[in-house]
Amino acid sequence: MTSWTTPSGELPSLLWSSDFSGAIAGNTVTLTSAYKTNGGEMHAVLTVTAGSAGIDFMMPYQAQLVASDGIAYAAQSFSAPRQSLPAGVTGYVVLAFPQAPFGGTIYLEGYNVGTPDVWKAEIPVV
Image (cartoon, rainbow, N blue to C red; front, side, top):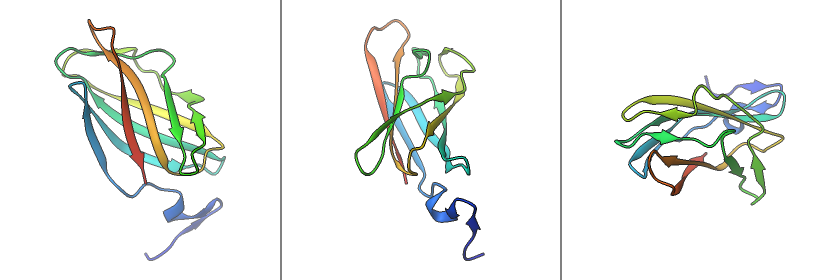
C-alpha cells in the first residue's frame, strides 16, 4: 500500500510514525499510539511503567499538547484506570485533545510516591 486517504485526509498526516520511549524520575513513558480521529480529536495512548517508588497521577491527568505552531491544548478527555501505579506496574494513559492538529509534544505530569516533587514527561508525537 502506498497511500490511504480517510475522511480526514491522507493517512501520514493522521497517524504517528516515530517510536518514542523515555525515562523520567525513574519511570518509563512510551508512546504506544497517536492518531487524529475523524471527529477532529488527536488521541494518544501512553504506556507508563512505574519505577521503584511507584507513581501517583494528579486526577484528572495533567497533560497538554503543544502543537508545532506553539499553541497549547489541554487534554479534555482521558482514561483514568487508576490514580496510581505501584512500583514495577505498567498501565495505560489515554488522552484526547479536541481540535488539536496532529503532532507536537505531549507533556504529562505525575509524581513519585513519597515525594512532593512533580515530574513532567515530554513525549514527541511525529
